[in-house]
Image (tube, rainbow, N blue to C red; front, side, top):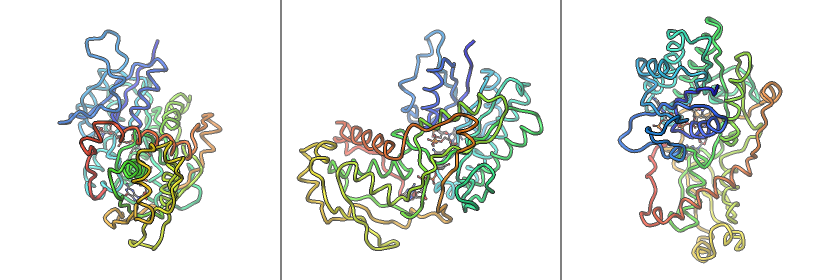
Length: 383
Ligand code: NAP
Ligand code: F7E
């Protein structure tokens, strides 16, 4: 008998990779998607099946984590063996602008799912994965961070996720539910939302190289993150729910890198050497040198002359609007428990992650439609 999974947040980065992964494993996947005035299924369109197809393995349901009745009905109708609660208002900076909504969706949303499972009498059948986060460590109390490191959240997002973490633990202990937290450190991919720092950078570099944009404005370049590839991290989510006993696991690469260093490495990927100078809001990144061969190979010889003219010019600037009221300065995770108990190993390194993202954004930006429309979604100024 094939298993049934319900993924909330299926239209997001992780939801898309997880859905693909579970379908390949023979699951029937139900996904919760929000009603939107624009299509919001771009990341899973390749998996979509017409509702008239028999025995579909991907079925979408309208829903929202702020709507208990809706969640209860969808869980009742789908009777899932596994629920992956990935839905969230996931942008840390935006959570300072929408703190109440973030608490409702990211905190109480978890409670709504647990209660629905309990009230429907599914506590023995349905296993629950909660998308917890390294943001819980915030102002870090230990380096590197592991499962026993005390939490110190630094944003409305992280505080909401703290509630989500503990309500999962509480329902596990109170009702014997198979409910687990994956404490995932930052994970990125070509599907990453455009306003998260890695994707903002790879997208901007592709556009600068193709002459579509002059410069990119960034926030705090000194923050350090432990970055992995989302494809590796969704495998861990699945492994967590295959364990006999529910538990909480850190999933991380164990390597930390500053935003500044990420930018340097992503530019290097197209044969461009950047030099940072100045400090604070006056820091800038100037184009220092170009490797003609690498640039021609990665971007195209027809773009080389125009790009070489940028040598000495500022390609990266700072805009204080991107700073956060409280910052998480350093994250680096210790995933020993996951390696030992789950047998989880990442396949990607930071270098192969950067290669994947750069390659994908160059291809995307070269698409006719993008070039003709000057085409890009306008980034929210404050994200
Ligand atoms: P993402 O790309 O921002 O996707 C979030 C998903 O949640 C989207 O499908 C979004 O729908 C949906 N959503 C937002 N608010 C909702 C609501 N009120 N009701 C129902 N659905 C809602 O995030 P991600 O990077 O895939 O991350 C997945 C989960 O892991 C999130 O919970 C995030 O907080 C957590 N997490 C992420 C990372 C990371 O580095 N990526 C690390 C640790 C934890 P729309 O498509 O309609 O917006
Ligand atoms: O920022 C700095 C920023 O927005 C990373 C979410 O998936 O991972 C993510 O949260 C760092 C921060 O991710 C810009 O100040 C500099 O220090 O890519 P981010 P995040 O805040 O770490 C965790 C694990 C989650 O759980 C979240 O859901 O980069 N930074 N300049 C910038 N960040 C952004 N977004 N934009 C900038 O221009």
